[in-house]
Amino acid sequence: MTQQAQTQSGTKGGTGAVANLRQARIGKRPVELPKGVTATLKDNLFEVKGPKGGSSRKLPPNVDVKITGTTITVMPTIGGRDGARFQGLVRALINAMVVGAGTGYTKVLELRGTGYRAEVKGTNVNLSLGFSHPISHPLPAGIKAEVPGDSKGTILILTGSDKEKMGETAATIRGYRPPEPYGGKGVRYQGEKVREKAGKAGKAGK
Image 1 (tube, helix red, strand yellow):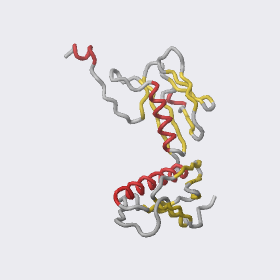
Image 2 (image 1 turned 45 degrees about the vertical axis):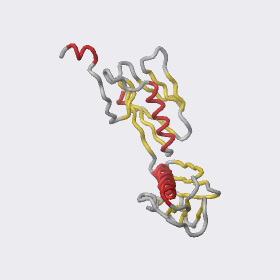
Image 3 (image 1 turned 30 degrees about the horizontal axis):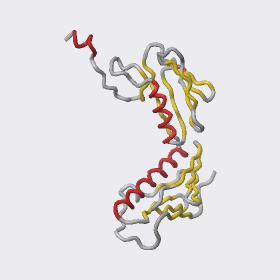
């Protein structure tokens, strides 16, 4: 796969000189395409492809996006704070898509509790979370799940190129059994700090 070689641009909302042009501190930074990642822009549809997958989305208005060789730049087409906000937003969206296509994203979930386990079967994640019945969660397209063998089912690793879809999937699985404030049982993100309460037994012992 080769990197994008031609120049493409898309302007949304406004033409000619822009009065009171402001740029976002991060938004004005160019996005560089890593090796093996390509990007295209046509009719306001931005698409990126790479080793870890691809994604596409319609870009918000009021920005001018240009792809020159392996560099992507975003400029506001309206003045004032709104122009800078749109510039920062679009730059963040594009950068997330490029990183996802190049290196991908990973979310790690921990299952804490007696008998709490996760198992991957095909495109479904089966969860035992202390309920009277197991939960089967279907994985969206582009998201993969893995349970390390040495974790005994207590670690679930999600990978994919779409940052938003990854976050939604992890949040939904965590939402089936959020960490409890007493004892901390439940599903949590790896490294997540859960504020626990002492409970009646702990208070009585003081």
